[in-house]
Amino acid sequence: MSEVIATNQTILVVGGGISGLTAALEAAECGKQVILLEKSPSVGGRVGQLHKYFPKLCVPSCGLEIQYRRLKANKNVRLLTMAEVTQISGDAGNFTVNVKVSPRYVNENCTACGECGKAVSAEFDDEFNYGMKKRKGAYLVSHMAYPQRFVIDPRIVAGDDGAKAKEACKYGAVELDMQEQNLNLNVGAVVWATGWKPYDAAKIQPYGYDRYDNVISNVEFERMLDPFGPTGGKIVRPSDGHAPKNIAFIQCAGSRDQNHLKHCSRICCMATLKQTTYVKDQLGDNCKSTVYYIDIRAIDRIDDFHRKVKEDANVTFVKSKVANITGGENGNVILNGVDTEGYNRYRTEHDLVVLATGMESTVPAGVFPAGININEHNFIELDGDSGIYGAGCSSDALDVNRAAQNATAAALRAIQVVTRVAGQEG
Image (cartoon, rainbow, N blue to C red; front, side, top):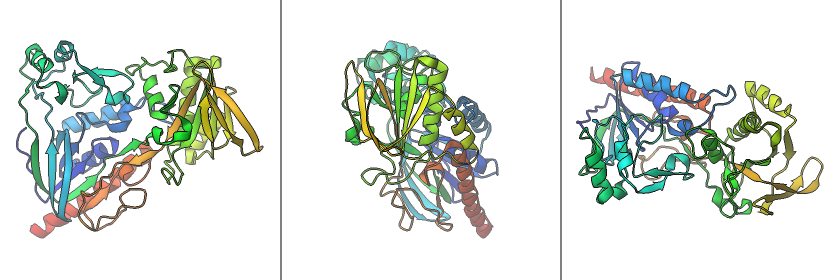
């Protein structure tokens, strides 16, 4: 990796998802020098794992490809993947940032030909697909990965598979002796855009995520629909690979709950409404969808999408917080609870359950200097003078559109900081 040059007029953007990309590019296109850090081997974040956006139901590749083109064309942005911030000290206009860069074991000579992946035999759970399929020890994160470069799993580097990967590469791209690097960067402002992670469904014990094969999360269901995903784009039951006939979607699974996430994640209602359209498009009248909800939070123009879904005769809405899930026959599960509109108890059998798990903040503890305000939901609070600004889902639970808008605002605040520094030094 070549030397990384940064000054107090540089903006550091942490996180390469849709918010980080937006913030970095907006700042760079205003003429500012930007360093963009991404913890994983590829940018794109959670958006890259979606099948479609709501409410237009277009594929995420259209939005990401635009951002990738902008990124490739802009020389003001320096991208570092597999890079993680470990400490920030200083204050606005003069931060020192400690960064750990993990080895990829593949250099920039890589053409993504895939020969190294073919040569190795070791397989591991595929993080991009939430462990629903396996990947090789030498792999490309996804078909849309950027940079389009393979990565070698550190667990195979010292073994026979590492040697096989190196031997298979015709371009001298595999470097098994790469070492972890530690960088100290001087920057003027920081945009923190590390995004979110799905709440761990296994913690919601009454719903049996870790006991029943046919209870899955909404992010896992989303990956099913991707033609490059774990099921080749088919909606199936994990227990037997058969198409379901009666799917339950449970809202607020771990959200708006004193025992789990207290906040509303805002996207879950719309994500479920979107996913019922997947069922209709693929399985038609052969499958029914039932949405168990506290209330549907579809605001602004998105309410039209909500109304359209309600018109589908194959989708039923039950106003209820499901109490628990118990086992049925043939891999089916039984939902138990009370319909709060009619106050009728129900014990309803379904052959697949999708939990709409909430958005959990990934803002880390112990990294920021004193004075950065983190609220009770672990989101970064806006402070106009801090020089460190949360963007996208580091600042609140937001959908893609609002996350991009929020990231643009964070970039503008960072630009103001480094512009002020330049004026003082000029």
